[in-house]
Image (cartoon, rainbow, N blue to C red; front, side):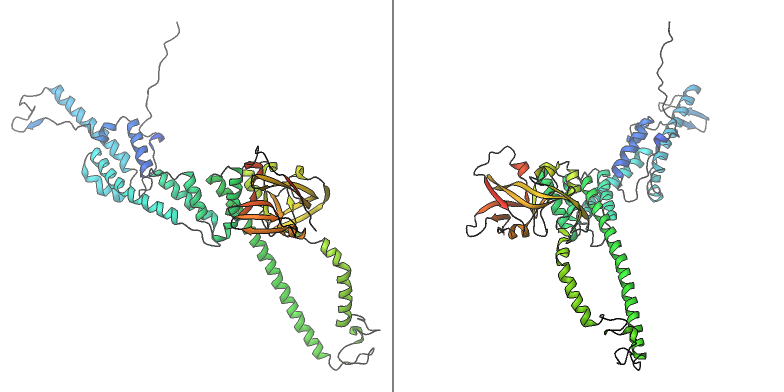
Length: 482
């Protein structure tokens, strides 16, 4: 026969790390969690009766000094074994009561210990500690909630430090039994940001509404922190460039003084080429001189010719600027939104149409990577060019438009429709209320598309909210870009 199985019911020792709990904060911010941990540790030791007052201290026998003997409450004399049993019970009571008091004393401040130590039993001490902090906790909760809601990050302030303080206050409230829901904390974060982050906030809200999947507070903190770090890097680059510029200006200024001094010293010199005073032959601008053709008039004529010759080259090399922040791409990634389901945004600041979805191009030509600079200072690249067909909303119907000469920028978050290119094609763009209307060429000027405003952006969410809806009076229009 196999030996009978046994079950180990041995509890951890008194000095076990399982009974080590964090100290109670002086301001009581961690009272709720402290109380739960304390009662759990005491219960694990089997001493709960000494905390809630159910365990009563044994009453010792009365000692009669005249007879040198003990007496029971009924006046009879106890036996020697009864006296020893009672003494053992009294010792056990003091030992276990002291264990509970030590558990409490080791986790509170000296100030609080001095306040409660004279109360005697562990149950009375614990009751007093509870009364002090449970009355205080309510007021602290109100104060913390107000501080969290009124927190604002100043322009130029450290966003990371600001977010850390907000998270600390939220966790402190949670430790006191007050939970801040994700939706409320999301709104608190947005409301605490500097005004310069409002375009990014509008973009985040617009992308979330289009995707019908709002960001969590954790995702929101990541996006804004990434934007803050990008701005910090941009400021450092700008400061570095500014330092170099100042150095150049200083050098040029010094050179100018040096030149002036040199000219003053050469006033009596006669040029052997043009017979005029004030310069040497090597510096003469006239024919035969060392700097022939380099005078102000000659330079102006050459510069005019050069500008005329390079006009076309400068036009072709002009860089494109997009108004929308490139962080929209990070937002769309966090929303797990496929590029083919992202809508279009009307952009009054873009120099060209941009599209990140290769499948929307009806004609396409690969080009040498071309930098596109965004309003937030970042850069994305365009690697192709062609025509794109889009369905724009018009009430319950749609209008199919063809955007000409669109740059293919895979890292753009959404298709950007440039208003200046629409106008250049003879169409008109009219903003009224919270609607952007695109009108056909004159003289008809019929409304061919109506794009609603979503948190500050005129965004076409057609792929999402019209999916599966039958279209009526489908139009065909070409938005020719010049």
